[in-house]
Length: 389
Image 1 (cartoon, rainbow, N blue to C red):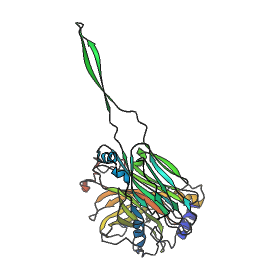
Image 2 (cartoon, rainbow, N blue to C red; image 1 turned 90 degrees about the vertical axis):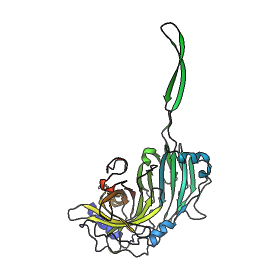
Image 3 (tube, rainbow, N blue to C red; image 1 turned 45 degrees about the horizontal axis):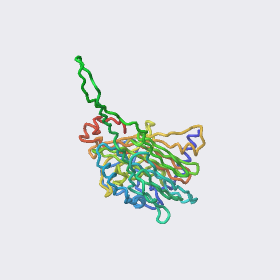
Image 4 (cartoon, rainbow, N blue to C red; image 1 turned 180 degrees about the vertical axis):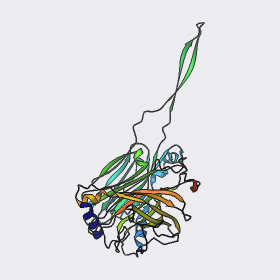
C-alpha cells in the first residue's frame, strides 16, 4: 500500500517539472507522447536532434576550467608521463543537485580533498560563484581546499588523481662461501624487496558531510548521499587507462514532466568530465511488467550517436516513511546501440526520485567497446564482459 501511495505522490509531486536540472526551466521539452515501452528502441529514431536546451547549456556554462599551479611542478609532470602511474578522475557535487528555488538557507561547504600519497590536479570548478566561492591557494599537491556556499543549487570540483607506481627496491649483499677445499669467495646476492606502504586514501571533508575512499572505490565510483536537510553530495570516479576504451560520466534529471510522462534528460561527459553531448529518454513498466528505459544520445551539435535501452529498479525501504522511500532511489543498467542497431557499449548508474516540488536526479557511467563492436569486446580482452565496469 505504501508503495502505491508513494508512486502516486511522485507523479503528482513532479507534475510541471521540466527535464532540465538547472535554474532555467523554460526550455521547450520534446514531445514524447508518441514514444512507447514496447518497440525495440522505444520509438526513437537515428536522426540528428538538438538537445542542448537552455537548461543543459546553463549546466555547461556553470563549469569553468581551473589553471592548477601544480601542473608547473616537474615532479607532477614526470608522474603524469609515467605509464605505470595510476590515473583516476574524481567528481564531487554538493548542495541541491537540481535547482530548487524554495531552498534559500545558505549551507557552508567549505572543505578539502586530501590524498595520502600522490598528486591531485584540479581540472574544473562547478558553479562556483565569483566573490563567494573560490579555491584556496594551492601549495601542497596532495591537498585541495575551497570555500563554498550553496542555497538553491550546487557547487563541485573535477579532479585528476595520480598515484606513483610501487616499484621494488633492489638490495645487493655479498656473502662468503667456502668450497670443499677450504677456499673462501664472495658471492653477490640480489634481493627484490617491495616497500611496505600504507593503502592510499582519498578524503573529502566538509562541515555537512565527510567521507574517505580507497583507490579500489575510485575505480567505478557512483554514489549519491542525501542529507537530512535535503542537500545532497554526489560522487563519481573512474580509473582511466593510458590507451582507454571510450568511457565517461552521465548526469541529469530523472522524473516526471508536465505531461505526466516519466522521462530523463542530461549530459554525456568524457572520462575527464568534459561535456561531449546530451541524452534524453523515458522509462516505465512495459506490458510484461518489466521496468525498462529507452533513449538516445547525440553530440553537442545534435548529431545522432546511439540508442540507449535497459532496465531500472528501486531500492526502497518498504518499512520507511515516504521521504525515506524516495531518498532510497534506484538503479539503471543498459546498453548503447549504433545507428545499425549493433550493441557498442554499456551504461549504468543511480537515480533519486523527486518528492513534492523537488526534481529527481540521476548520474552514472558509460563505456564503449573497443575495436570491433560486432565482437562485443571491450578492449580489455573480456569479449563484452562487464567485469570491473
